[in-house]
Length: 449
Image (cartoon, helix red, strand yellow):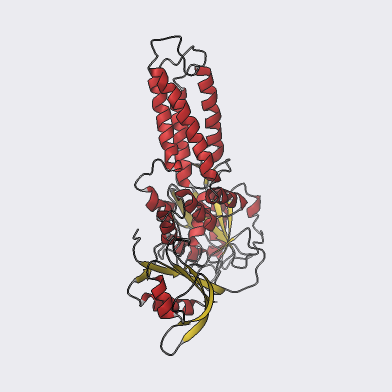
């Protein structure tokens, strides 16, 4: 990920809105402000001004100036608040990009700069990404633990306990020939490792966040005809796979494609997504009736449902909620300005411009993951992977511990497992950072964050 120069991007969701925020960060942010507004030397705070689009056109806006290093990124930052009109937003961004030193931000680059400038820890940056994509109170609580640092404190406590136990075990290596010197009794060591392993498992769930089954989980797009299912499939895949038409009954055969979630959510794996015929009160013709019947069969056998409804009402005519499987409610066609019910239990997306497709992908990753844990490890793949590896290391160590013995007979083997567990937790405490961790974390962000 490039991290040099001055960057700019839309910091709010794309599409029409009451207000939009364009964020600029970098050494030439002050130049951008002086060239594009009436402010020559902005001071920290909020300014009412006009953004100059050309020699003859300007628009009113508000500008918030954060001088570095006391800003989100640690650099000079300007946030431009303006009317949320997509055409107007593009005009403002085009004007900023006319300045040679300014370029479009990469996904997650603002938060990456905050991390590199010591304004955020890596865990806090992951918390920002989780909060953006959170679906439900549990994910929000997990994101708060990352952002406020309490999760880091828990990880350090686990690591300190492991380091203490490892030190006691390794000290016993020097006294294997002296029966009267026992740094820690095997029974005590086993009990402390059992407690620690239980805490780690509760963080990710009894199954360790494993996928429901070994083959790709199957998700099906279901809903009424013309609910936007085929367009959503194309948006998720990033290619035109299904035919999109306003004519009801266009989709007859089930179309199944593999979606690699790994590119957006490291550790999430792959899923099979199937576009089905729309389910209506009456079929268009005999072929449509057969397609609907087959669709109902696929819905009953699927691992999870993507329930599409552009109205946001989700009237359960087909009895979807009676099925014992995860259901993601999706208000499709979010670009249409209509009165909708409370959307707290659904995800609004727009297949035309990709609005919140990333959020939907994370929701899919959560839905196909069998977990009982409610901690951060249940929601963040990197944490889940590290905690699972730590549990494996502890289990490897415990198989060499006889709780009824006077001393640990093979301290070298016990220490080896504990070192593996400590290395795994080290990825979370910051003591050990693989080369690919930073790129993977920030690649899950959307542009403008």
